[in-house]
Image 1 (cartoon, protein in one colour):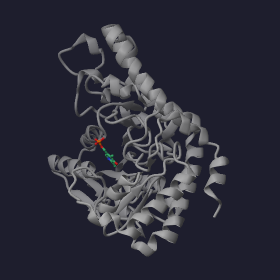
Image 2 (spheres, rainbow, N blue to C red):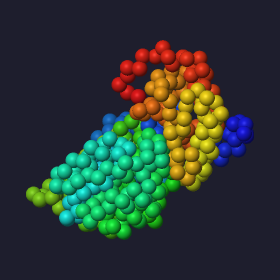
Image 3 (spheres, rainbow, N blue to C red):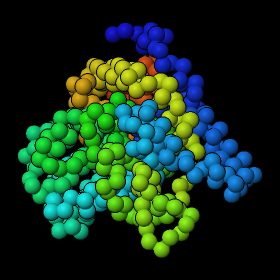
Image 4 (cartoon, protein in one colour):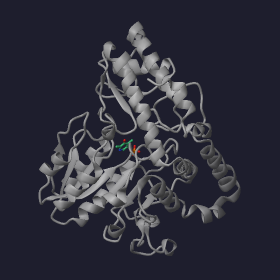
Length: 410
Ligand SMILES: *Cc1c(COP(=O)(O)O)cnc(C)c1O
């Protein structure tokens, strides 16, 4: 195995680490909350101390188009989507509802929805309610918890009543990367639309929404995009569908002639129709500089380094952790995985807490997963080696056994 120092010395992305606030912690949880870009903190400070405190209401001149321009930046840097298809607004959970409800309403006579039993809770809860509200069924795919959904499984659930398929591009637990192009094609062949949840893939793997013909997508900005806690999410609607979908939550920020305050809602002709109310400007202010980092690093280079990091992590886990009771909870095939690696262990919760106490920050996901994300913008190869060494040492010495596992946030 090539020494980690040599890989770091030859890493073309190494300089990006200096654009983040870095401490001594081996932070492998950037898929849950990305590290803070220094430029984002400066933008947040400017938004608060200059634009708000001094500019006050006059600052709306620069704020009014921020949700749209930030959406365009995300689309260009990370989504393979043209300008005018993506807008930043609300949370991912809310956006799932907004555009899925608009889609189901649009597909008269096809109220059924297909989801994945292993998908994120919001996605499953929301689609169960949406289908029921429209007198439809929610078909839940029994996918493999590690390998994720396949095109054949999706095909087998499609009927003439299914109007919408909702899936995650990268599974939040196992990191399985779904075949977006193939699954979208299979769904379209049976007349269903597809909504991809990109929360764990945006900024982690290259995405090509336009080439795949994806109908709808949503995703988080506080994970691999490093927008900060609670940064607003984005939503994408394919350009030829925008005018056909009526906003399910009609608010004044989606209205044509917003300041005419008209008696009836008439939606903007653009993607802005899916905005609802006043954007959270302070949270939004961090995003443009964060996305600019992705644009400069390029998703291709980030993916190359990400795969090298996860491959090394898996190899080291095989060598040093398998004998301590760990097994791989992520697809072994690099083409089938996103940016994080999940290691399964019966005592994963206590190990993840003990690891944090020893400066290795990953997280725990039910039922037995220790998730580790070596985010390529700010993680070095030496960090991967050191993290595995510390986890091995914790489990070998039994340090985790004295931990009280009662915690609300994992
Ligand atoms: C993180 C995540 C979300 C989070 O949604 P919020 O509304 O921001 O809490 C949704 N879906 C998936 C797949 C996620 O990984």
